[in-house]
Length: 89
Image 1 (tube, rainbow, N blue to C red):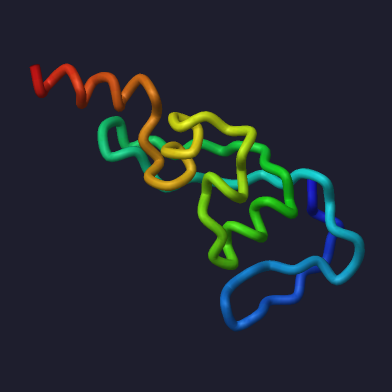
Image 2 (image 1 turned 180 degrees about the vertical axis):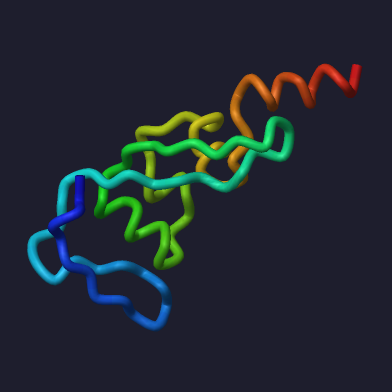
């Protein structure tokens, strides 16, 4: 957990640790438009910071597949996305 870490808030809203940056951080996704649940995922701290500062999600997280990147962007779970796709048929 990051409880003991102190953060300094910048105007952009990015939380920047005053000490050494942790390797991974917990990130809460937006609520899913289908089921209404949010997800907490562990992400590389440097990659998350790059994305928050404007990097494209596929550039910041090249190791994630398209469904995982969509979860970060919109909060839509892969199974919920499948549900949306079934409705189109």
